[in-house]
Amino acid sequence: MDYRKKLIVKPGAKIRLKDIDPAWHGKHETEAEAAQDLAENVAKLTHLQYLLYAEKKHALLIVVQGIDAAGKDGTCWHVITAMNPQGTTVTGFKQPTEEDLAHDFLWRVHPHVPGLGQVAVFNRSHYEDVLVVRVHNLVPESEWSKRYKEINQFEKLLARKGTTILKFFLYISAGEQLERFRQRLDDPNRQWKISESDYKERAYWNDYLKAYEAMLEQCSTEYAPWYVIPSNHKWFRNLAVSQIIAATLEELKMKLPPPTVDLAQIRKAYHAAAKDPAESKSKARG
Image (cartoon, rainbow, N blue to C red; front, side):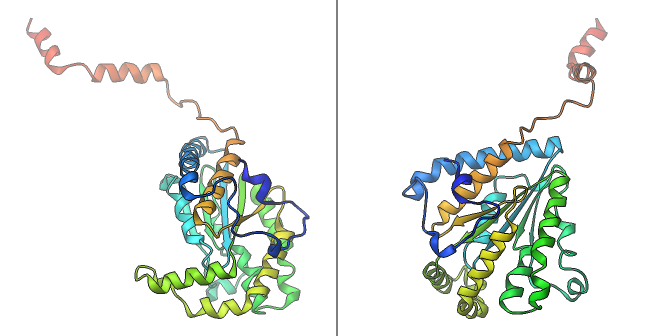
């Protein structure tokens, strides 16, 4: 199943997140049923990233946004495990520094976009500047409202230079979020992830939904589409994201580049070096 058709936000579409089921899980009923498809997607990603790295005609930017506890870190982990770290980077965009704030809001982002042959994953991104900034009134509406157009222009520039852009909004229900917070509290291995702001931000749930809806409506384009990923089931989240990335990369029709050396000469040199030294000495004695 190609989840792109089901989960894409079509340019110009109106989005009501409350009409989307965050527990939707496609054709599979359980994680076990989805395991083979996920493994096949991971294998495809490994091969496709190898082609992308070798061919150096394309770049891939993956943007991951989501409600707190939706699984941004987990998604990054599952995507990256399929790829060679030599050609892949992950950047997390947290609260901007004083130096960041002294520049335009895209200044801290541009150095991390991928070059040809590279994959870059953004864990949070430039979209924080139309999300948390909007919800908490950190800058006037007259300023953040202009950023949608500026983001589209920025992404269009990247696309024109050969970057394929895929953006994933991980969507969970308020109940699922609270359950994940509880799991963090009960699990010593995840208690380090707990933040007081996690619970405080729940008071802004509806405000965030409005901000996410505006982000999806105004910044899903043909060259940089948004996908809403139902993420109550972590296994489906990973399945859908991996399938969408693999299917998109397959359409690039990438190929291994031709050799840059004379293979006949290389083979000749190899065979000369591979001769048995003992055999050569025996012939010399004879």
